[in-house]
Length: 547
Ligand SMILES: [Zn+2]
Image (cartoon, rainbow, N blue to C red; front, side, top):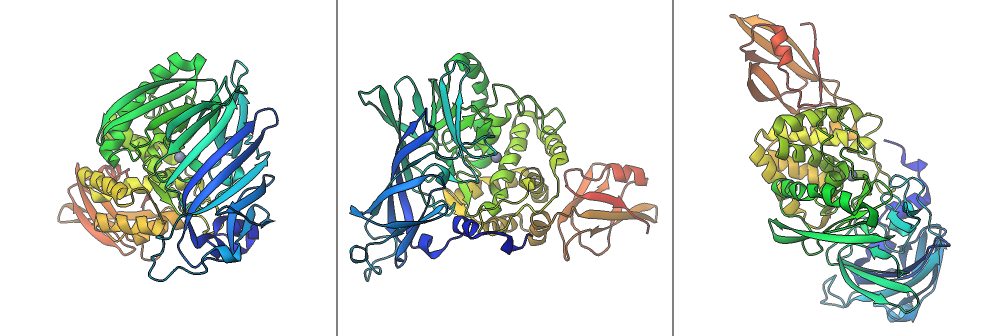
């Protein structure tokens, strides 16, 4: 783990929960903005409704990244002063107008709503390589029409609008009103409330998200879109499916998006009901590859199957479905329904979502097909640094949060040794942490409790080190039987992950291995047969050693 002192004060302001952030809890963001398509700038206002949950400080921290500027602000209709420290802005509270402590007999969170209005403007950082390099994506479609999107995961929503930019505080609702030329449309999250003509060749599209949402998921998509829709009869009733694509791609989209319904059925089977029936499900065509924008998933895979036409697993199992439709929609359960408080723990978003690809394949093509896929993607693991990143500085861990964490979840499935139990575990996890924010530690404890094994050392090994454990083994003969001797090596002290070992052709036992030698009587006759039968579903190395 990197030493903390290599981080800056700005990293701390962005990634920590300092007192200026924790005394207030966001209830709602009401965004109104007008992008200038010629100047690549935005002028806007955000009205933040919040509740006081602790004795208020003199200041509150609002994030808005340079070079964007706050012009003015009012708290409960009273103009307030503020100061800037890089990407953090500190709003000074008017002394006489705010309660200095919570009134007696009043529970935190039950005080009246406070209202902070912020007027802001500037040229937000453009995203040059979206979605990996975040910001606003200013582009044009093939016919020369403006086509604008947002991609700010990691970097943060504060690159284009002022907010409390920390994943631990999700607003309960958001409204997004964007004013665009009347020849174009704006698509944001949630449901379209209204479209108003402003009489000056512009229209304002107002969208409303009625469920908690991560700030980085809030989006605007401006373009010459056409709309088509469908419905899905799902576990919670009728789910509205809405699609916004470029006019000239309508036919391709109508064909490619037929993958949506089987995907949603597969995910509801494994994870429980789609978490945002109230806001509907949408795919919105974007100029960049994709992003899990809640209830308005960004789609830019160009109507090809695979990941831009390729199979990330190299097994053939990843090429007959659209990677972006499947992966980004998987995030509706992992990332959007269950969100981590700190991006350091983002394996909970990406590991489970990556594994949703395997479960999708399993649902449609069977267990063996899914197993091949998850084993195939191991070639993308780099073991360069731990999966969990440093806390409180808004830094992610290794990109192994995708493929390695996915393989970790696959092993947990082997350890439950029963797919209906594993499925129930995933469904309960989505229920238990419904619309909430979590830490890795909470998820680890939940998984240990539900599998019945203390997996602490397993999580430490796979999430907090880069070492792949090795199962060392050799055989001896006893009364004509081949005895398998095994132990864990190349691992942290006390590593004790249960593993499935072959007792004979087609017979597997889940065994508690440790760093001490143990033995198992098998019905194999040769070492070769035994070696071939070692379970490839575990992401470990098997190493035959001398007795
Ligand atoms: Zn993802």
